[in-house]
Image (tube, rainbow, N blue to C red; front, side):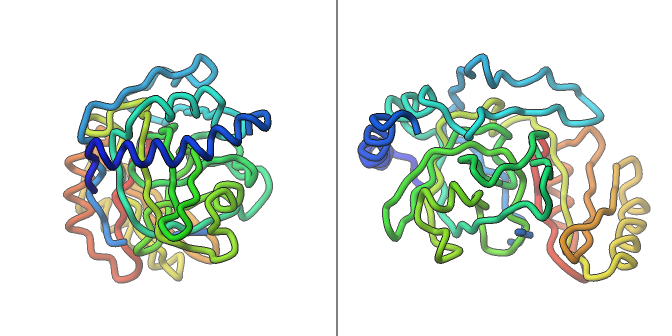
Length: 266
């Protein structure tokens, strides 16, 4: 995806019109073949508001909560977008999703909300500030990454109902979009906590069998099997949650069912 000065200027100019009108009014399951993690064309710029400052990150074990503001974005986020250029862009298909049960937590550790301007992405750092533009209607909206997915082929981002409505894809269910990244709490091109998520499997037995194979083939890795919506999944975390190892696994793994998706945990 090109991230040149002119494209960035057009995105900012078009989005400015939408945001100025919005601010004047008072602020405002999913499941592609593994794709390489996005690499920023320039170093990420991030000055986190105190309300969403990321928690200290351990080197092993569980992934800490990465909170996003209530509602997904703030007036400060929108002002930042209006005065900066994207640091990374990509195009692809978007869809939308909702939680299968009330109180379900997003991957960032907060309770999922249909009403928040948030989205799921497989590899952008959790908490990233983005603008998603519907390439058919040119509707655009800011939102933050708070979840992981979509774990379905040929989709790059999964939106909440509020996010889908804000760019006009709620009724159609899917559309082609541009994702422009403006802030990332952590570097896109270095570090991170990585894994490979494999599935869906139609039976728990097949998922467990594949889990046992991974435990045998990748000694020292952490492997779990878990259920989804009428499906089963396997996740492998290489030693140290190392990105290079995870990328190699995603390239090599060829499950009998489903797809191996490279996924960032943090």
